Length: 447
Ligand SMILES: Cc1ncc(COP(=O)(O)O)c(C=O)c1O
Image 1 (tube, helix red, strand yellow):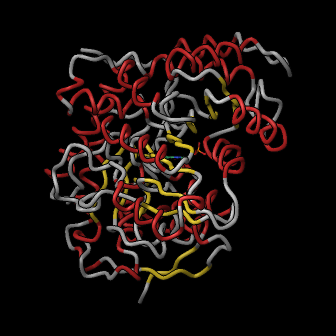
Image 2 (spheres, protein in one colour; image 1 turned 135 degrees about the vertical axis):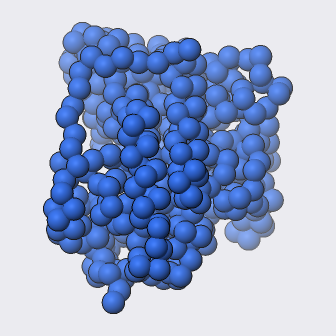
């Protein structure tokens, strides 16, 4: 049995219903625009929102802020070598910085990029290079009721179709995202990763793993694949990541920090290209957009990620949270993912058509009812792609406890008590980059 006790606390309070109504209006019915002081339980994201350990805070005090040759960088490089197995690392300010550095070094106009499912910033970075991001989820990935162990897997069949359509020379990069955030946080099997490696070799493409939640993925592999039940999370992670040519990492997830990221690779030529691009966009390659103290905290966090207890406890608490929601009569995607519970808003608010964004309507209702902030990952966030109308309630690491989850479950149950009273929305202001619209667009309720 493992757990935590609190050493630092932050007070939170539920604003009045009147304040919540007004805040939602002022935010243009987009919860990204809310002030966090108006939010009671914040499940918008698990990205950079968790609590660091005492060892991470201690490491921060010893951060080396040298512009070049920082010792904190050496500690990070050594953690990346030990935990992930890569020789070279280019730090970046966060995951999307790593995406810019790596994908900008690999892609050209007219390329196509298969990925089990592109996360929103990944999709936008691939598109920003003039390339076509193509989702290759396995069949059933978007079926909220199908109980399968590895619904996050990459469909090789779909990727082969892409190669047939555009030609292998137009597919220089294949990405696998573990766990698959945009497909309900579902894990990817090591066997699937091995097969993606073979596919990338067949077409002579670079194989990149988006490793944001690599330790959580390894914990799922240990639980769900009998071939790995006796292997440690660290061993599984190293094997899985070892099939890739490079990884992009948002340290805000499985390196347990509030900010930071990196690209890591064993390929010296790719390392050199990334390093040059990083100097342009991020910073000198031994700090890359991060303070020395943040590099130091990330080095410790990476090692904590594979010690097994933190990710194991997290997966268990997310599953318990999913159980509370289900008991409150809320339809949830199954099996419960690693970092979040996903509500099936298409089922919960079946009277609202996709074009009136049932997921976003539910997000607004959760806030109105109980000051809970989640995020829509359906037709509002992903225009022009076919996927279920999901609402993600992401669980920040080492932050909330059972009473918070009970509050959220009660809130969701109450919000869905008379579903017909919830109305759909329309977009009032549409930002220029369609792949990023859910971050800033404003909406109006339909009459
Ligand atoms: C799978 C995946 N890739 C990339 C990113 C981008 O990382 P960041 O938010 O650190 O820029 C995220 C963030 O949530 C993610 O979940």
